[in-house]
Structures are given as structure tokens and as C-alpha cells.
Length: 543
Image 1: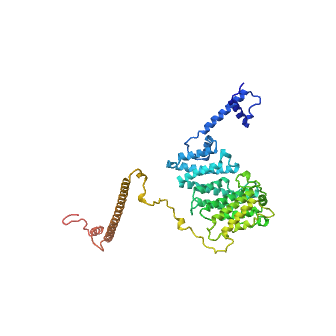
Image 2: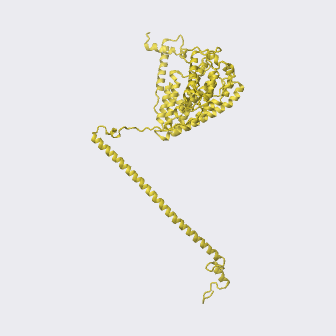
Image 3: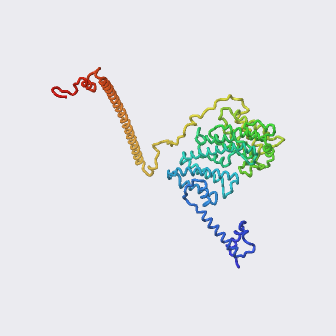
């Protein structure tokens, strides 16, 4: 029996699948193998076609589970998941319908939660290769969240504020749990936030401006990062990496605005001191109590020796994957990354603190002096030695250690040029020769006539607008004066009415006294007539 090319391909594709190869018995007939393989390929083909048909219009998912159900139904790769999120935003943006405000606000919170979930997946399993591409998913999510923040800044700000509050409450709970966990001595416990939270705060700096003096989202985020660096205990290599990442975020937030993050300075100086060549210098003193307590642990005593054993020829890279954080090359990568952050920090602060760089960077200077990369106890590899020299050179240049000390001065604020808002108005060298697009194709005389007509029309509108404003102003003044006159006359009448009422009241009171003070009408006269028996008697008449 002859076998066709499709049959051979079907058998090969069927047997290459390890899970399904065990289903086929070794002594099955050739026809049964071909039929099963064709059935399998047909089902895979139709499943791929069904999953590839991604709709263009989606309903807005208001929960994370609903979004994951959509992704599971239509997406096969990370790129498809990003495409679904982009189409959800494009079909339901508030620019199309303002009534979508509430739904898109809930969707924004869903995107933040997915951002955290994808970041945590990177920590657990890495990028996932070209099929998942988790880092590219984070890039796509950042673009969508930025666009949604531009559409409705108030809605995005409310979601971010609530999420920052959740992060802070979760950190407070972890700090309370850390006290019990440290007593129980449980392994793999950390009080630091997850990697997804750090990635989310990294995206925050790209969505909102970090150069504002005060911002209702960025300022609380900076305070939250500072709280994490200062209060969170350091128990393992994972905690040191998380703290370094948190310090890097603080440096990134304050870089463009030339601000100072003392928490980042203190943490980086403490991490450098963990690699000191001498045990006595390694044990203290630390600007951070958490790092000082960590330096006494046995797991941190081998940082210098582990960094000295690095044999690579390329700069070691700091990895955020959980499986690689306990690698032997991790201490060398940590030291290289911290020195790189120190260089960036020193370059950012150069010339912006009015000759106070020596006092500001004193802790980092003392920590660098404890390294001694060529020490016999643990000589650092050439790559780390060059990085130490580079960081020391940048520090020396910024602090001006070789020059005479200049007296400390108050730090000056931003100048008027820096605070002024840049204008976007076009500058025309000669407005008379400037031709609009509507004048293209016309002769010079016709263009001049049309330009004159437009100028006359603008002037006519301006004069009419001024006349309307003058008329409104005159009418308001007339009404104000008339109100004053009417109010004065009204007050005068009210005053006269009050005087008449007082006089009438006094007269009635005197009459009620029985006519002793005044005689007149009223009940007093009637009572006097009754006493004199002349009540109701008329002249010539009867009672």
C-alpha cells in the first residue's frame, strides 16, 4: 500500500507529540494511525481557526476574572492578549461616549490588577519566551493605561489613589506578620511587596508627571516607596534585591526634578557595606537598622566571597526571577547594579545642592572606602574593580574632594526661566508674507484682497464684541444705581411705617387706660356712659 505525503506528515506530527504518542499502541495498523493523526490535526486546525477569530468589539470586563475569561477564549499568545485589551479600550473609550465613564474606571482597576499579576508571573517563571512575552504585555498595558489617563485624568487618579491605599494597607499587614514569622523562623518569607507591585509603580512614573512640586498620585507613591525602604526588614537575598529595586525607583522618580531621596542613599550605602573586605567594617555602622540586623546573619557574610568568585567576562545582570536570585553570580550582579545606581544618583545631584555634596554623599563615600577591591582576603573580579573605580571617580568629581571646602549655602529654588511655561505659539518672521492654506492657488492680488477682507471681518467682530461688552457694562451699572435708589426709598418708607405703628400703639394704650390721660373713642368712653346711665339714650328718645 502506497503512503501519500500527507499521511507521512500526519504520522510524524502525531508521533512527535509526547503526550499523545503513548496513546498509539505499538502494533496498531497503519490505517488506524493515519486516521487518528488526521483527526488530531483537523481538530487542532479548527481550534486554531476558532481562537484566531478575535472580535473587534468587546464588552467592558469589570472584573479580573471576566478579562481572563476573554483572554482564555480568544487569545493563544501574549500578543493576542494585548490586542484584546487594546480593542476593549478602543471600542469603549470615553471619547466615544461619556456614559462609559464608570465602566472604564472599573476596567482601569482591572488593568492595574492584571499588571500586578503579570509582574508576579515574571518573578515566578520569567518572560515566558516569544509566545507569552510578559514584558511586552507590560509595555502594552502601560500604553493603554496612559491613554486612559489622558482621556479621563480624574477617573485614573481615583483608581491609582485607591490602589496605593491598598498597597499601603497590605504592607502594614505584612509588617505585623513579619514579627510572628521571624519568631517562627519560617523560610521564604518576605515582608517586601511583590515584583508586580514594583513594576506597577514603575509604570506610574510614565503615566503621571514626576516633575511636579506636588502631585496627588506621584507624591504619595514617593512616600510609600520611602516607607518600604525604611521600615521593611531584610531577611534574604530576595529582600536585598527588592530593596535595591525600590531605591532605583526612588532615584528614577526624583531624577528629573533634582530632588533628594535620603532613603535611597542610605539603603545603597548599606548594601555596599555588606561587601566590605573586613568583617569589623561589614558589621557596622549602618544608616539602616534593617541592614545592620541583616549584616549579623550568616547568609550575608558570604557576599564578598561570592562576588570574588565571579568568572564572567561581561557585566553581570540583576535578575528578578525567583529561580535565579539564589544563583552564585547574584551577589556580583547586585554589587554591580548598586554601583551603577550610585553613579546615576551622583550624576543627577551634581551641582544642584550648592556645594553640600560632601555631607549628602558621606555615607556612600564611607561605604565605598570599605570595599578595597584588590584586598587579599577577597579580590574582586576585574569587571567589578572597574565599576568601583568608575563610581569612586564620579563621586570624587561631584563632591570635589580635592578642592577647598566652600561654605554651605541655602539651596536655591527654581528660576523664573525654569518655572515659566513654554509657549507653543508659532513665530512668524514676516506675517504679511505668510500665506494660509486657503490662499493656495490664488493670485497675489486675490490673496491680498481676501486677507484684507478677513482682517476687516475680524475687526468688525472685535468692535461688535466690544460694543456688546460695553452695553452689558452700562446696563449693569444702570441697574446697580436704580437698585440703590429703590433701596433708599424703601428704607425711608419702612422707617415711616414703623414710626406710625409706634404712634398708633401709644395712642391705643392711652385710650385703654379709661380716658384718664386722653379722651376719645374706644371702650373707655363706652364704660363711662354706662356708669352715668346715659348709654344708648338719645335726646327725645327712649332707652
